[in-house]
Length: 106
Image 1 (cartoon, helix red, strand yellow):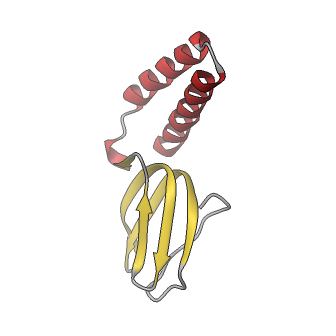
Image 2: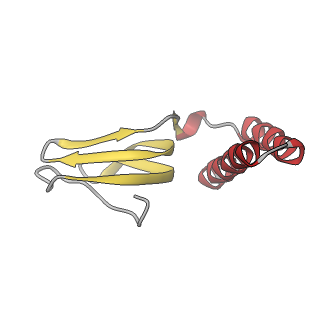
């Protein structure tokens, strides 16, 4: 979550949380079955499980370091060429997302 990590078990009390960019581990029993990188979003937890809404989500093994570094370079160029606060904000958000992806890959 945005305020820190949390886990969800069957029968969990309901809540909604903002989700920061990073990796979600999906467990089967006590083993990680799947790792998914999400670009932030929201998580809804209820007694049946957890639903995450994110604009971007990728199986961690599908992230390619070279592709992410190219995306980061393009975002840095966009930031350098930005003409207004909106363009700067979008480029800064993309840079932060790319850095989170690179951290997840490491």
